Each structure stands twice: as structure tokens, then as C-alpha cells.
Amino acid sequence: MKDIGVNLSAGDEENLLIGSTASIGGSFERLEKIDAVLRALQESGEAVIHSESEILVLEGEEGRVWSGKDVYYSVETEGTAGTTSNLEIIELGAGIKVTPQYIGEGKIKVDLEAQLKNLEDDNETLPVVISRDTNSSVTLKEKEPLFIAGVNTTKTSEIRNKLLEKNQDSATVKLDEESQLVIFLEAERKSPQESPLVVKLKSGDIKVSPSPIRKTTTEYQFGLGAWYGTVIIPEYQTTPQFWYGLEVKVQSGENFGLYGQLLKASDKNLWLGKVSLEYAVHTDEDTPETINLGIGLKGFWGDVQESAFVAYVKDIRQVEENLLTFFSIGLQFSENESLYFASLGVSYIENEWVLEAEAKYQWNNRASNWTLCIEGKYRLADKTYLVAGYRDNISGSPIEPFDDFDFRGLYVGVTFLF
Image (cartoon, rainbow, N blue to C red):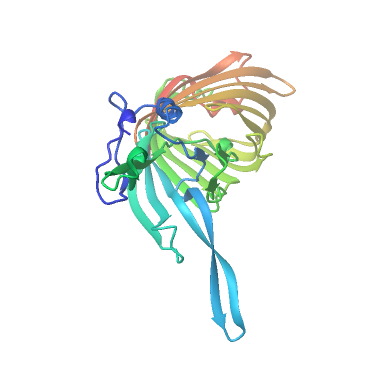
């Protein structure tokens, strides 16, 4: 295994290792480069690739990968009714159980349980199964593979020179054949739209039994934030100022989501609140698409009293691994006014970045306009995000009060989650 940068220390006859790193010319690089070396070794007869697999596991849940075979043994039992014979199955091979948890900064902590089962001597009438279990925990960088387990096996064979086999003094030569079983692990986060892609297999002799990916628990997320931007309210204020407040997100199972935000102007008696409730309808597993049905309320309190309700349908589709598109259509209404809207947007996610752009058309019986919003979010540290964006009307005039509840022009902010 030195050809791929893996050095296994010699120990017992079979030594199971967890957590050792490997490298090719320094840092451990993408699995594609490792794969190329392994396939070259396989073509030369120096290595065998037993199986390759990919599984999708919900964070905090357990997934299992097993490669091996089932061996059948006949077990005879003597009783008063005579001798009965039953087939017993022994599962032989190697596998791992993984429990992933994202810890921020592009790192994923994986709890590992590796297991190896083989026969001590398959020539014996009664099989003796050697089983080894190892528990460990490793931290992976996303998309950077890590060598996590190896097994050293040494077999000694005796051979005699055929040309001298009639010679009683011919020497017996002992050959030690050493082989190593190596497992590589690569972790990567997937968006909720990719969750139907439970497992992909590339080999025929592997059993995969990942845990169910359906969420049944309720998750809570809170955050504190500060923003600097302009909220334009006619006859009140139009200058930029600081806003600070609280954000909350509650996700119940796979379908229900509650999102809220409460902001306070830094030098005015003015509060801005937004809350929405969404129900997600997941479509066919072969199409990574989600339809969200939502209702919401937003309004001002303090020196200004304004509010509006909204009801909408939002279709979200994953077109590429890191690219989502979404289309929304809905209705907003206040005490004296109603408004229809339709919007089209795109969201791009890459490591620490999230970039989103949305164009919205609004209309009613007296006015219409187009609004453009571009926003970027960057993760500065674990649970700390920097936000910057631009929102304004690109055609038509603002429609009150519906355009009063969002920042206008350039704005920046920072959020701290806990």
C-alpha cells in the first residue's frame, strides 16, 4: 500500500486500524486520484478492488456498509425424535457503521464502528469465527478522503522445487504472502432536495442497509443579528441605520417549518417583525423537487402601525449538485389593499458561500412593479454568518405597504446562531 501513501504498522496476524491518514505527495487529495492508483495496481495484479459504494445518511443517524459473503454450515442436532439437520448462516467479511455530524468550517465528525469477521480455519468441521470490532471517531474535511481502516493478513505457504522433488534432501521453501484490506471514507453534505438519492452501488457483492432518512424530530435554531440598511416608510424615515434583533427557525419532521424575525431600529421606536409557516410536499423520488405551501405575517409596531398577510406556493427544484431554482406565486393583502405577485429565483451553494438572486413581479388593479434582490451569505466561523445584499425596484414605483417591510438599496448584516 506504499504506492498510495498508506503505511500500516505490523502487529498481530490481523491488525485492524482506525483513523490513520494517507497522502499522495503531501495532503490527501481527491478519491479520483486514489482510484487511478488503485486501478493501476489492480491491472498489475498487486491489488483487488472489492467494492465501491455511496450512501446518504441523515445527520446524527447511522448508516452501514458491508462487503463479504454468507457461508452455510449444516448443524445436526440429536433428539428423542432422531437427528435433525439445519442450515446455519455465518456472515463473513468486513464493514463499517458511520454516524455523521457536521461541526462547521467544512468539517464533518464521523463516529465509526468497524467490524471484521472471518474463519480461523475453513477446513475444520466446526467453524471458528474470528470477529473484531473497533470503535473510533474521525474528523473529515468535506470531499477530502481519509484512510480509516486496514487489515494485515499474512499467509505462509510451503513449496518444494518440482525438479528436485524426488531428492529427499531438496529444500522446502516457505513463502510469506502479506495482504492488506484498506477502506477509504469521504464525507460530503447534501441538500434536502438530494435526500431521495439514498444509495448508489457500483458492485454486486455488497450489502447496504442505511438508516431511514425521514426526519421525525423537531429541530430548533435561534440567532442574534445586526444589520445596517434602509427601510423606506413614507413620511417617516429614509436614512440608513442599524437594526438588531432575533431570528428563529423551527423544523418539525420533513414537512413543517416555522421561520421568524424580529428587528428593532437603533434610534427609533420602531419594530419590524416577520413570521411564516411552510408545509413541504415532496414529489417523486426520481425528481429532486419540493413544493412549499406557505402563509405569513409581517408588520411594523411602535411609531408606525402597518401589517400585511401573505399566502404563497413555492416550487423548488435542484438542477445541479450546487444549484437550485425556485418559482413562487401568491397573494398579499393588508387592511385596505391586496396584491398579487410571482417571482423566479436561483440559489447557488458552494462550501462556505450561499448566493441567491430573485426577480419579483407585483401587481394589482392600480399599480405594478418589478423588484430585484441579490443576496450573499458567507460563513465566517462555526455558526457565524456575514450577509450582504441589494434590493430595489427596477421598474415601477413601490406599492404601499407591501414594499415597506424589506431593506431597500444596499444592506449588510451579521448573524450568530446558537
